[in-house]
Image 1: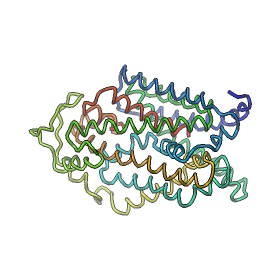
Image 2 (image 1 turned 90 degrees about the horizontal axis):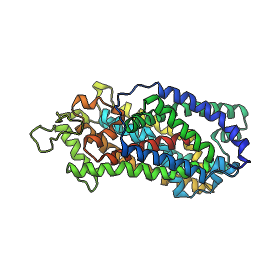
Image 3 (image 1 turned 135 degrees about the horizontal axis):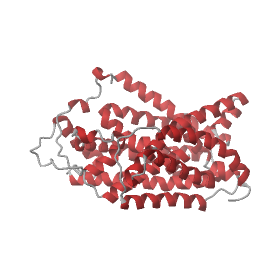
Image 4 (image 1 turned 90 degrees about the vertical axis):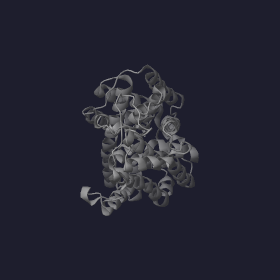
Amino acid sequence: IHTANIPTMKKIFLPLLLIMIPAVLSAASGVTELEGSFKLGPSIILITILCLFVLVGIAFRAKDTNDFYAAGRGISRVGSGMAIASNWMSAASFLGMAALMYGSGYHGLSYVVGWTGGYVLLLILMAGQIRKYGKYTAADFIGDRYYSQSLRAVAAIIAILISISYCVGQFGGIGLMFKWVMGVPYAWSVVIGGTVVLAYTLISGMLGVTKNMQIQYVIIIISFIIPLFILAFKFDYFWLLPQIGYGAVVSDIVTGIPLAETKQLVNSLGHEYAMVPAPEYAMPFDPATGQTFYQWIAISFSLMVGTAGLPHVIQRFYVVPKSSDARWSVVWGLFFICILYWSAPAYAAFGKVFSANPEVGSLAKDAIVVYTAQLGNVHPLIVGLLAAGGVSAAFSTVSG
């Protein structure tokens, strides 16, 4: 590591620990029903990807303060868009989005609308202005914009609190995937994941982190899309574009699938499944469960505003050369994000059918993306790649 980086690393090490330790401890105390055991192929994939992240961090380690905090302000529009998408598509998006729609049906789409809508606000109101100021953090921007050290301190405290809360979910996702792939106890999975993230972040700074995010996006989107096409092909649901063909799956959920139909199979856990009619799954609003139109709008609006204020999202606008690049990077980022968000409802629908047996459905709703592929008898290596994609999504967000 360049000696000029040592003071910078000392300054950033304590804030990182302040964020990481509470988040790791909180995530490690979580309870999960996901059953895990050592799987050779998926474990090799996961370990290879983790080693790749560390090697990229070393290869692109920061040489000065500008590299460490802002990646030298030399990231291209498309490259920054990939990093934005990867940084945003956390374990909450990769695993949680499908899980949300798996449990809530149509109502879960309010989260998709809110989170993507937040990037529209960023594009119109914030991206160009934030880059124009040329600072390193959101707290710097607030302090200089309003000429107030007090506001700078408040912004820094809020950013740390948001980061801790956000990291809890990411470490939870890391723990789920490590346990499923390698059979490592959940608490130790969280600690190992946190250690790897901390290592390559301190080594590389924002330059290496951004390069890793670009690689992580490729891993995330490939690992998410391939099993979906395989599932759609195996079960004859318009495999050429399952993001559209899953409408037939929703129809089966609403009308039910009798055991006598040819789609009745034995899943990889040994349970026969048949879908009983569930018309409420496709209902836009259900006042009986509190899923009203006004609640749908309230969730969407809250998430739009919340997305625009997340520190790890705002941080991405400092790494491009100029203001116009910041705005275009949001456009590219939104495009890359939508590829995954367009696919998540299909996983939710497939998962609803495959886990119709209550015993199967109770295994791990939070990991329904991985379990959907497993229940659909997708090859274990592909399922392992899917799990590695979930880890990549969590790592990308935590490091950002």
